[in-house]
Image 1 (spheres, helix red, strand yellow):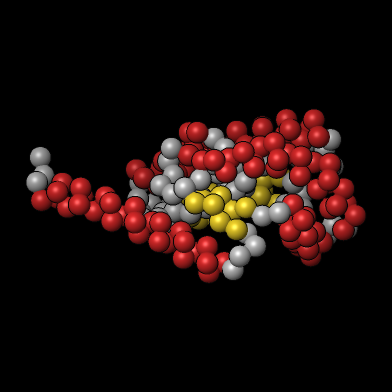
Image 2: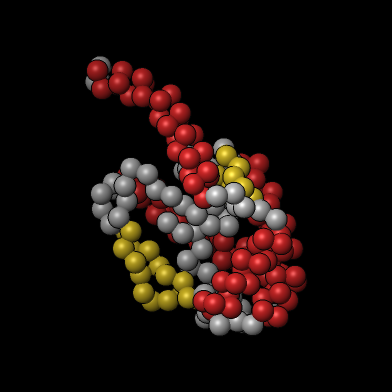
Length: 186
């Protein structure tokens, strides 16, 4: 499930001050919705949830939704996934993917030019004036809340293996307690 599907932007490429306010506003709105969806998943396992979609070219949420089918494990990904304490409390395993600003800028440029019709110059300007400063201010500090810190520059399979190992260890720790509860119901 993607944390970042309900955002909105004032207009054009905002200034750093407008960006900070917009990031806070968007993040609060998304987090309230995401927290509700994640909590609903725990209560309503097996029932589908309508998740809003976001148009990154228009910088706004669309009227379309996608159906999300909850399961035993739900992956929540997004820049603010570890920012809000209310959301962190709902997560079993918190993962932070770390990479250099150069790699972030290069990947963003490739993606935005290819998928969003932007020019390399507009991406570079936005990254320099808005994205990098806001990421340093709001996203980088959330690393301390992660159970695992992965390199975004390492092969994906390495990160997946580390996450799966961590989850397996967590499950092994709670399995005896679950077995005891099942063996001795109240």
